[in-house]
Amino acid sequence: MKVRKIIAILAIAALVSCEDDDGPDTSRIIVGGPTDSVDPGGETGGGETTDDPLLYNATEYLKDIVNFPMGNIVSAAKLSNSSQDEFREVLGNEYNSITAENDMKMASMYVGPDDYNWSDGDEIVDYAKANGLRVHGHALVWHSSIPGWLNSFDGTDEEFETLIENYIKETVAHFAEVKDDNGNSIVASWDVVNEIWDGPVLRGTLFREKMGDDYASKLFTWAREADADVKLFYNDYNIAGEPGKRNSIINMVSDFQANNVPIDGIGMQMHLNHNWPTDDLPLSIEQIAGTGLLVHISELDVKANYGDDVTELTQERAEEQEDQYQRAGYYYTELVPEAQQHGITIWGFRDSESWLYDGGNDWPLLYDNEFNTKIAHRGLVAGLNGEAVE
Ligand code: G3I
Image 1 (cartoon, protein in one colour):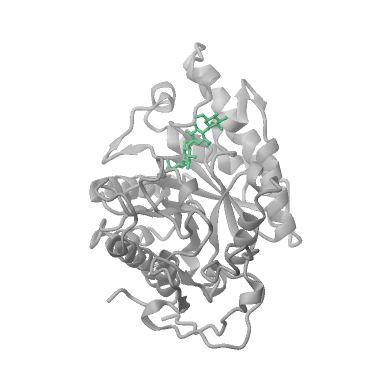
Image 2 (image 1 turned 60 degrees about the vertical axis):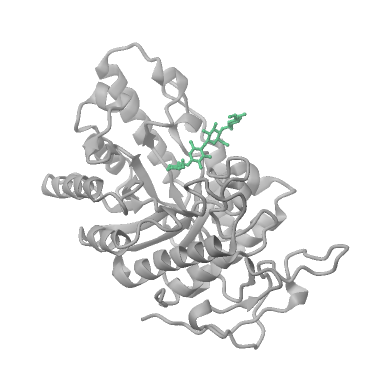
C-alpha cells in the first residue's frame, strides 16, 4: 500500500491567477509550493471542501503522489499560445508526461508520399525537453487518422506497404533524435498502432486490406528497426469492459512474443463511464499486467452522461465519477507491478476541451471549464494514494 500522507495545504495567495473582481477563487487548482499544513487524507483523498460541492481545493499534485509518470494531452498550439498560461501552469504542476492529442498522428505528419511535417511534434518535444517532461508518441498508425492522399492512393499494395514502412522508420528515427541530459530520447514510447480490434475480431482497415492480416507485426518490426530503445505499445479502448476484445489482444501479444515481434507495452485507453465497467475494471488490469508488458492507462476520462439523461453535472453523478476515477487510480497503482507501470495519462484538462464535450453534454475530466478542480480529481488522488472505494 503506497499511502503517502503528503503534507501540504497551499497558500491561497499562491492560487493560479485567481484574483478577479469577486476576490480570490479558492476552488482553483493550487500552484506554488507547499506550506506546513497537514493533508487530512482519508476517504476524501485529502484537500479542502469548497462552497461548491462539485469542486474542492486540491492539496496534492498528481505527479507527486506516485512513482510512475502522470500525463495529460497537449497540442503545439496550446503550448505556445499566450492565452494558455493557466493550462501550462496546471500541466507543469500536475504532470510529468505528455501525449500529443492530435499533432503526432499520421494525418498530421504524413503530408504526402515520403513527405513529412514534424513541426508541431518537434515543438512538443522541445517543450518537453525544456520542462523536464516525457513524451509518449501517439499514434503512428490508426484507421481514423489516415491522410487524404493515402486514403486515395491507387498504386500497388507493395508500393503502399513501402510508403508505410518508410513513414514508420523515418518518423520513429526523427523523434529519437532529441535526448535529455542522460542521453535518453524525450519521446520514450510510441503507440505503434491503435485500435486494430473491433470487439474480438480484427477490424477491416485500409492497412489490413493492403498489407494483410499480419500488418501490425510489420509495423512493430519497422519501429524497432528505427529505434532499438523506444518502448513500443499497442493501444486500444474498452480493453476494460470487453473481455472478448481483451482476449484477442492478449492472444496477439502472446503470438508476438512467441515469434519475436517486438512489443513493450499495452495502452488501455480507459474511456470509462461513471458506472461502467465495474468488476471487469480490476480484472482487465490484472490480466493485461499478466502479459508481463508495460501497462499504460493512456487516455483516461470518465463520462458522467453516457446515457444523455442529465442536463447538468448532478451531485450524484459527480460522486459516481469521483469513485470511478478513484478505482482507476487505485487498481492501477495496486495491481500493476511497479516495473510495468508506464503511467497514467488523462485525456484532457477542462471539460469543455474534451473530445466528449459535444456542446456541453458531458463533464468527463478533472477540471471544470474555468480550471476549477472537480471532486473527480479528489477521487483520483485517493486512488493513487492507495485508498480503495468503499
Ligand atoms: O484541426 C482541425 C481544424 O483545422 C478544423 O477546422 C476542424 C473542423 O472539424 O477540425 C480540426 O481537427 C479536429 C481535431 O480533432 C482537432 O480539434 C478533427 O476534425 C477531429 O476529428 C479531431 O478529433 C480528435 C480525434 O481523436 C480524431 O483524431 C480528438 O481531438 C482526439 O481527442 C481524439 O483522440 C482519440 C485518440 O487519438 C485515440 N483514442 C480515442 C480518442 C478519442 O476519440
